[in-house]
Image (tube, rainbow, N blue to C red; front, top):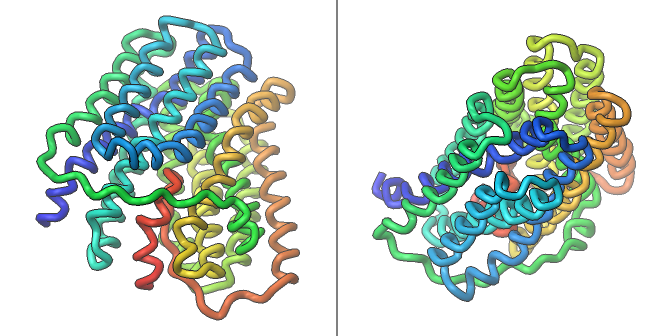
Length: 406
């Protein structure tokens, strides 16, 4: 209990940060619609966020090594608040894209600080319990952030200012905490080819995961508006997607630990295709949309964690942090392009096109998975399945003790 209380400032900072960062994507989409941005321009905003996220993941550990945890966190939150407050000062899609790059850097940088702090404070005996609390706090705040869209007016100063206030407030718990800063650690090297060498299937799977998750979270409001959902209904639509993904983690984890993970990935992709087909054929009415959003989360959200577990089955103990970073690199690459492509497809072919794109991605994953099953047998020894947040390149170090212990 004393350890949990000692880390409460970190958890509160994560919650406040996620309330801010989790709300800006849907708010930008709805605001862009309100201001007459094209669908492609709205998709560009989502892509810009993940470009900033990638830059932040790569650069944050280096800044952390120079100035320390608290100063780095302050710099990143300031950058995020500036990006949020600038929205209604310069109403232009290209300017907003630059601001979203700043928001993406803020998210990646702040999570790098938090996860590095946790990694330094935790012993293996406490790692599972504290990491679970961290993930619960993060995902719960993300769900609430989607629901906030129902009460935030699009293209309004007060909406963006509220998110900026939450971003600034995330600094207070760490700034006022008496807990000593941890010692600085070296940043993990980014070796993208490591993931491909250990598991080509995992590398492809995380790209497909980005195709699903990044598209839905950034372009979901555009889809909801196209099918006639109100703003509060869009908020619930996005929240149910996250809720479905959260609830399915345990049963999918049980399957991934019991059976060949490649078969589990193929099964998930088959379920995702069925969900996409059903969603594309039943786009009328809020009730159908809510059910579709929940099922879409159930069938697409676990892909990243299963792929990560499969890749770690072929990794040595000293490669785990760099392998996690390499897989997150592939996720970021997919996430940069996915929102813009999805927005263009919706503009050219209608709202159902978003599901067609995701279905094609999962069909390709099935085909590649079948080929990889012919290339080599399943490993005799496997690491335990762990729900892995797609946050920073250092998250692999935070989870490493759990994998080694299991």
